Length: 313
Image 1 (cartoon, rainbow, N blue to C red):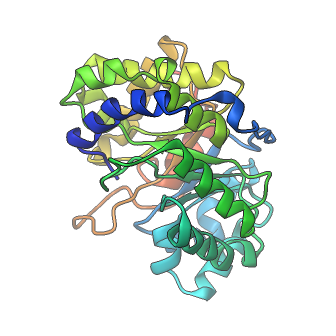
Image 2 (spheres, rainbow, N blue to C red):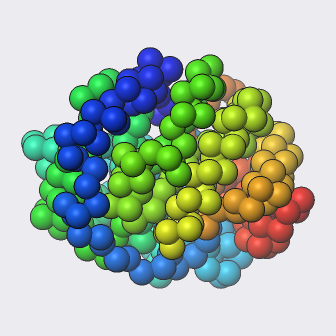
């Protein structure tokens, strides 16, 4: 899910070329308008995804309006039809966010759309938002803004509701080339700004424990991305994942959110998920249940209880 330093460098070199080619013109695409997110909290994950089928595990969280977050790989391949229906029944009426891949345009994009129809739309899911992994480990050397537009158009044509924003997920996880981050802030990148505007918001995959271990430039990149996006009236969603925090996840999250709050960059909404398909023995950060703060449901429930007050997630 994380881009290599090599690919980040390619993005840095690529965007001026796109600009000169006219791909970034704000006049070439109509600005979609989406409703506000129905909740600030979305819980889910890969390891332990079947835990979501037990309504007892999320009773208070759901009663307070907590949302559901479905990582498509786990939703497609770790569950059977009965489990998927049980989860949707347990979260009946709750807002749903989903995480999808990014396959460019053409047949690959159409396949993503068909999976969304089969596994979500045909089951009655109308997502509040989709998080699309635009920047990941795959070689994005030839990425263009037109590819992003075509991807969105294909999903719309094949059934994704116009009311569902399809947001780009930024996975700026490599802090080794800090100068690249510094030169490519969202507030200064025409390419990044267009991605966010077309998508109707931004999703940031910057795990608290990982972010705290990076140079200050890394965290300031996140601050800039949140503040610029919100200045446009668009939501900035933070994926709060455990990464390698383990039982320090609560502590790391508290410290990270304190930092963002001090920099006037509190996210619009939070996703609490793990994306570890093969965790080590004794892994403490599965989907779990709301009473255990080191699990995905527990993290989101605690954020909700305290309304993400600094120092008390």
